[in-house]
Length: 192
Image (cartoon, rainbow, N blue to C red):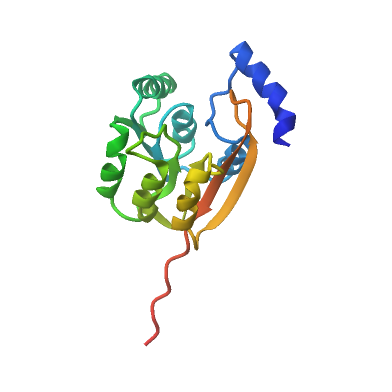
């Protein structure tokens, strides 16, 4: 199914007609679109078109961004749309894990892990730092989850339900994978 969309994705890219939507597998966008609600709090690691898309659907979005182009682009899109429920914070990517650690546990309905890594700052580290920030039955999205270097992220989230989406992203000439994990329900209190 992803291969069937490849020619259309390439044509849209060449014509400059890329949709203002997250740069993840399209089936994952559809799945999220049916679930994200106005009362949700979203933490996004890596901003861009997804920031606007999420801000139109969620109650609040906090986005960390290392790249000045994407920070300016996301902030500009939010301003053009008149949305004030999203904040794009400029942070060095190596500071993401420390910044996440300072946030309250179980305070986000969705954590999006989709940023350009650095040798000293990986998506696996972000998953490790962020998994406790997701509320019970909340979601963690890991883009490009089929990369072998993300195997540890899958291990860190063992016990979480996972849904894998495979397909062709806008502006990308290969089949990719986006995985959305759902955290377990709260533990039942021990009976006396």
